[in-house]
Image (tube, rainbow, N blue to C red; front, side):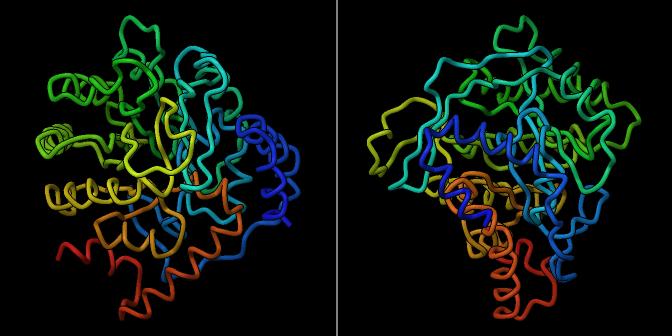
Length: 345
């Protein structure tokens, strides 16, 4: 039923379809039956939590934390909301979201459209904590001090989150990716470390796929020195190689199947650089159990998806988990933890 509804929504233009999806989930979420318990072989211990399964919802779907619990009911092991900025932001002019159906991909130039951190805080204040929730924070486009924006958003919202992701890799806010440069990143992480203080909330950094080995080394060095907990690899891409769809010429970040190979390669190189000292979360082009398994074998402790959900519907989550179990059995692994980084060993 839910997958049939998703197919109908794809007949609408993409941004209205997304808005309609959130409305339906917000209204119908309390009545949704929760997915059954996961096979214990899929449980993952990371960031101080036990994730019931390693499949998470990536940021971008639920920017304002409207439906995290509905998404958890669909069977995700964790949900990441945002990106949210300190002040409300309308984002870039429409149209700004484009399907590339022939490529199983999406291009977006949304521009961190969201209602701001205060609206999210109000929405989450009375939420009954259940399931693992991450909050992805960003800086306002017109901010005079972007590092201060991250610190302010962290301070305001970390109390509602199980972990916080620092998004410095969206291609749709001019200059934002400059925070991946070593000196700027060191300043940002130092500021957030002070803001965190003695609080145990895990901090993760989300990085771009369009980086070279030197940038991977710089990011790894800064993250390890700051003693934050992990990295999400990767955000959307600006590359457009090999696309078939007419919308490929649109500016913005590319997500979906064409991103899989590059994002997995960046993950593999980061794993080679940091080993198991950090929690790595693999995202980019995950549309099957085989895709998720490849990320895990490359070094991901956890995996996220979003674009494939828009094309395949929520039944995809259960299919991925079933396929993961079959792949573990095929390779003689008793538990998903045994497969993490298997290709790097």
